Amino acid sequence: MDGEVTVALIGGVGALVGALLGGAATVWTAKEQGRMAVQTALHTARSTYLGPLDTARRSAQRDVFAAFLTVSQEWARSAEPATEAARRWDADVGRLLDECITEGRAYTGLSAELRQHWSTSIARLGTTQRLTEAVQHVLLEAAATDVARAAQNVEQHAIRLAGLLHGAGETQLLDPDRVSPGDPSNHVPPSPERSPNQLRALKEAIDAFTWTAATHLNMRDADNAPDISHSA
Image 1 (cartoon, one colour):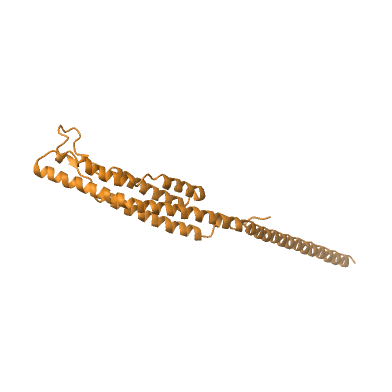
Image 2 (cartoon, one colour):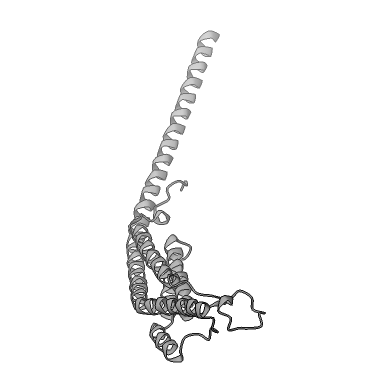
């Protein structure tokens, strides 16, 4: 009799344990399914919410990038006549220094009329203010990105070119303390190719910005991807 009771008890305990384990598995499965359902709903809601926002943001960025490209290209084109004027001015200074050294006469610079002619051609270019403002708009839309850095690179090349243009015709003194400032051998002529080289560098920077901006606009925004890695 005792054996039968023992068997019955063991059987009852086994059934109870089995029921408990089965119930626990059912509860875990239900919870996991609920978690996945919540995550799926969050995924869908987040995509639905962020999708239009991302589209609108990229549209705004595209407009700003295109405006910057237009401003920088226009400035580079308008810099071409000024660059040619600076090249010819620098070349004239070099030729005049050679003549002064050959003929043994003092260097007093180009004639006032010729200096005025070249400086007037360069002054028509204007400043880089509009370009700087366009860069600030790019920073507003895409700070800390390769696009912003590419835009700033364009601006720096434009500023360097403007500096060279406004310094056209200027020589450097080998010895500033030399008694005779008119000694042509004491003057280092400017390179006629310095401004054209800088203009080419500017145009290359503009091309680099174009490719960088295009890559940015066509790249999937990982920051807006739904995050389903955390439990509900």
